[in-house]
Amino acid sequence: MPFPDLQSFVAELERRGELRRVRVEVDAELEISAIADRVSKSPSPQGMAGAPATDRVHGGTGGVGLVFERVRGAKMPCAINLFGSYERVKIALGCESFEELAERVQKLVKPEPPPTLLAKLKMIPELAKIASYPAKVVRSGMCQQVVHTDDADLSMLPIIKCWPHDGGADRDVIVGAGAGGDAAAASGGRYITLAAVLTQPPAEVGGERNLGMYRIQVTGPKAGILHCHMHHDGARHLRMYAECGEEMPVAIVLGGESVLPYAATCPLPPNVSELLFAGFLNGTGIELVACKTIPLEVPANAEIVIEGWVDSKRTVREGPFGDHTGFYSLADQFHPIRVTAITHRRDPIYPTTIVGKPPMEDYYLGKATERVFLPLLKMIVPDIVDYHLPQWGAFHNFAFVKIRKEYPYQARRVMSSIWGAGQMSLTKFIVVVDEHVDVHDEQAVMFQVGANVDPRRDTVIVEGPLDILDHAAPYCGAGSKIGIDATRKIGGEGVVREWPRELEMSEAVRRLVERRWAEYGLGEGPAAK
Image: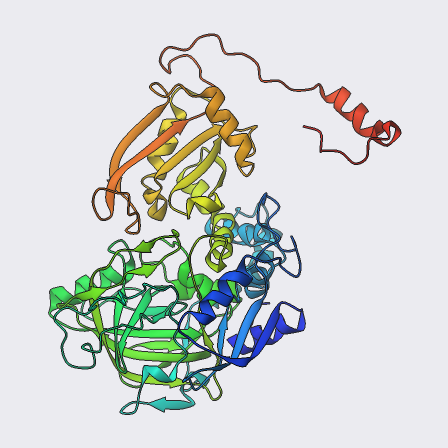
């Protein structure tokens, strides 16, 4: 089962040897980040344990989770890299494997109809479970054991600076600074990075709450900047408030149930609540408690909640920020936050993360999403057999897709479908291969590209939306994308000469060699293909 709060999750990681405590004093400015970067690229205690069966690379890295007990100037410890391996993500989600969780998702979104009355009766307990997933409001929660309003001060938190040029440390960051601390330019470049940011549409509009993982640049004791891409639900909510001429209430939630950070990163369809999905992962609904100063309800088991209002009309300069692409995302205009309260449990732990050149903590969360959401992607694009997002593609640059090819230009149809499928629409390079190719073997995929592709006939370039962080795009969030059809060509796909057979040993001889391998005295050797 998942864990009801961050500290019970931390205790379990420590019990399993997946966490280390650093008891000497450290600095939140770069030092914690440098340590975490180094640890995240070191061997994991469990090696490949917890890795999906499809994994080919980096399953044995991720190091350990870290808790820094003494952070200079802060009033609480700081935890980082808690989700930085397959094993730790698996522990957080309370599952034996990502494939197991994917099967649960598939049953939820596309249940098999029961064939008999007895089978229908057996489904009643499952239906009762589904009814328990929605969030439920309670009267009090440990996230409000301590409440700061007038004395709220973000400097009490061990908020880290990740990379040297974060926040534009070499120049003024704030443009058009107003009251509430904005003028304290973020020369320190500190960011809240592992928060579930909770928003909801205006009351007169109605709609589901949204939980998204958006970064927050801290600009003063009671001020920050919300970085939320235009494609995300949080930005959609903000546009609704702008149309109404109102500020948007926002709650920045740190910690809580061990499934919450993952749920906040999931690419769910619009108007599907991440809190509902978190309840599904958790096995029971997430308990919520009313905020103290804003009209929102937040997870009662959170470590820390920052309450505030986002100015929907005014923007200020945010960034740059060292991002998961391995580059600094460029500075741009985003909306400032006015903090009205900080609440927390007694003796809280502040969770954070650092992103940069992979593998890092976000890679393992992303890989879990790749596996768990395969059934949903198959529902949208039934032609897909499997897919793989290479680590070096930084999630949105590359997708390798395998299909069961049945008709001409099917690969192009699949590309077009993916470019219309939620966040997959931002994929810059799509490579489609045949069913027999292992898409998780990157060398095997590129072999098919080299062997099966005529660049003029088998590629297609389209214009469309791209990830905001793609600095190569000619426009912010817009540019070109390319699809590469690396499948075997058939009639109707342009000029196609006679296609040769791909080399493959006969099954009978392969079995013979496997059976007699020990007799040959050649050691273990590579696996037969």
